[in-house]
Length: 118
Image 1 (cartoon, rainbow, N blue to C red):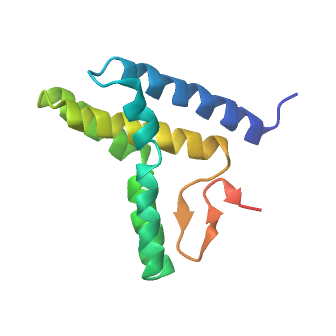
Image 2 (tube, rainbow, N blue to C red; image 1 turned 60 degrees about the vertical axis):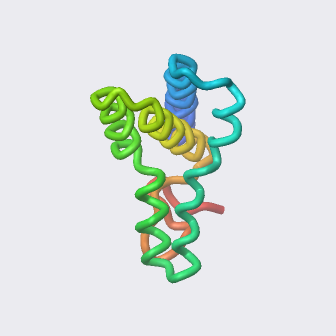
């Protein structure tokens, strides 16, 4: 029987697959996905200031709701770049969660909504 954390990882792997599918529908060459998939980690730069700023900035760049909002705003405005940003953010957040990286609490980078990182 699967443990809950395994189920979450399987679910997130499927969601990552959805982000790839959505990306394929956009007018960009495949290499853009590979080139941009780690860009949301720029949110970690907030940790250079302090833990609170780091957690806030990290969570903004890894929030699936924001990613979906960007994507749909791009659809509404006929803006492929916003759709791309949303797809990349969503895919990145899903891939992070496959590896156990969740949204951060302000006390420590390793304290996430999925538990503590090892």
